[in-house]
Image 1 (cartoon, rainbow, N blue to C red):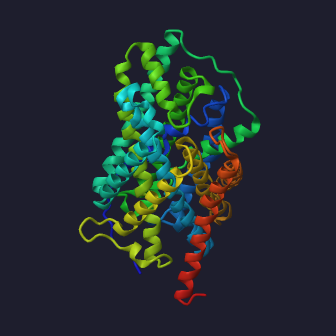
Image 2: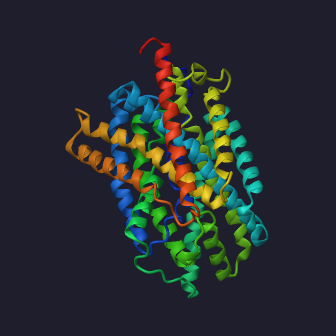
Image 3: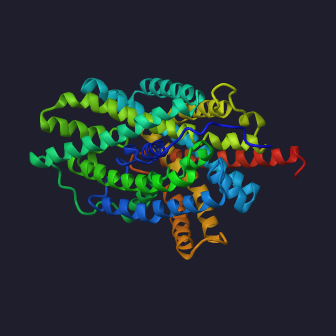
Amino acid sequence: MGTPHIPRTLGLTDLVLLGTVAIVNVNTVPPVARFGWATLALWVLAWSAFFVPVAVAVLVLSRRYPGEGGVYLWTRCHFGDLHGFLAGWCYWTNNLFYVPVLLVYLAGVLAYAGGQRTASLVDDKWFVATVAYGWLAFITAASVLGMRVGKWINNIGGIGSGVTVLLLVVAAAVARWKGVATAPAMVEGSLLEMASGLSVMCFAFIGIELASTMADEIRQPERDVPRAIVITGAIALVSYLLVTDALLVLVPAGELGAIQGVMQAVVRGAEAAGVSWLIAPTALVMFLSIGGAASAWFAGPARIPFVGGVDRVLPEALGRVHPRWGSPHVALITCALLSAALTALSLFGSSVSEAYQVLLRATVVINLVPFVYIFLALVTLDTARTGARVAGVVGASVAAGGILAACIPGDEVTNVMVFALKMGAGVVAPVALGLWLFTRSRSRRGLG
């Protein structure tokens, strides 16, 4: 069965902005910006040991196995149907968790749009739920209308990411100029905590492979994908270094909140400069940035169940394309419903901050599984050069270590047992469900 036709609408600018909004998520910085100036070195290490190997894998595997589906397609072609399904399933279900992470963070940022009067809403579950579900409905509708419409949310979000980084850099410069900058230590925290933080940093650099899930929707993939990888990689590293530096000098490490940390820095910088009126507009810019990231991570991975439906390893209805808008509408709506359910589940029985931590770490574990696969594919590919094989070994080692480190609870966790149970349920249950669906599909098709 051939893949239904989807229009090619993505150019180089779209790919760079898509990569930027997917990777440069400043919400990942506050949970790890507590190790003093050593945090900057950890970002460089994560970029070198994870982003660079991912970039090599994407370039090599997308040329060897071109087409819609990304990590799912590469793993299936290289290791077979079961492993391909498992890699694609983890990549997809990870984003069912990650989109709620972004939706919860989105609400936390919007709480600052009304200044200090509304900042306390960051811990109000009804406010968080209203914002989260409202934005989820909006990006679902835009994605169903096709990438001609949906890509503009991603593009605006990418621009918003750049503006957010610039505003934080300016705030930090003002704090230094006025002598109100904090003085963080060179190294803070234990090695175990740093290992856990490094896994989140590696996760922060995931996203350059996202465009490959929509390979059949790129106008000139062979020319534009390599260029987009180089440009986006440089933007991502510089952005994370600048944002971390700003947070370190604006907010004492012990006071940095996991959800509101970036806005804490904005508030301090604006107050130090005597321009508190900038707080609300900055919150709105950040809202667009995080909202664009949610859109990118919602629409892109939805192509995995779409291709799974086409290949008949998932219900065939998921492989349908809308006759008017040319979008995988059934897969998109299914993803929206599942993300909505997981958002509700994460908020039940937890504080907003703890729910954010559980979602983030479960996301890290599940999302690193398909990267272990693509790194192993890079190592065992018969046409791979020595440099590519080395990148594969390094990437696989870092990904496997990151999976273990992500299971370490952070400071926001108040009940370790509840955290462990939710992490277990969040990781084991989706994988077990995927394997059951795969086995059931093969049995019904008589493949045994």
